[in-house]
Length: 168
Image (cartoon, rainbow, N blue to C red; front, side, top):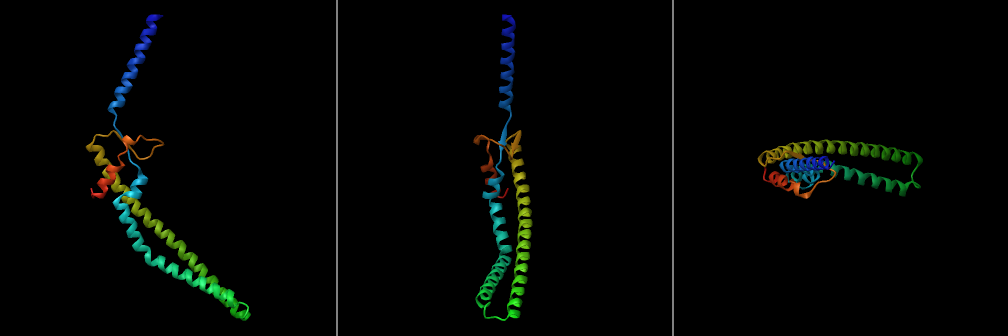
């Protein structure tokens, strides 16, 4: 009985030692995708490019919104003194302008989201190439991009951000 207990204890100790040895050989890294999206130089450039690209449309929408508000205010102010047919015509015009504005907003959001997704796709493609280069150069076994918990010592996001800003 004692001999069996000693053998079991030795077997458990050997397994534990093998686990520690295996864990010591495994090199794991982690990359925070949200930080790449927020803090990387290419993401910043893409964001500025999108702002520049969509600025004329945003300004046009602001102009139309101001026009609608002005027309609405004028209609409310003059409604009592206007003839019924003039009031109805102004209301119809206001309704048409509002529908056009809503359509314009929807198209703007759709186009902006499409372009943003294109830019993010290119960013992630580039980031994945950089991550692969780091993994191969530093002999990582696994690099994760999503985790419930990660120890800060395995986080290589700063190195990826640096490599992206250097244009690698």
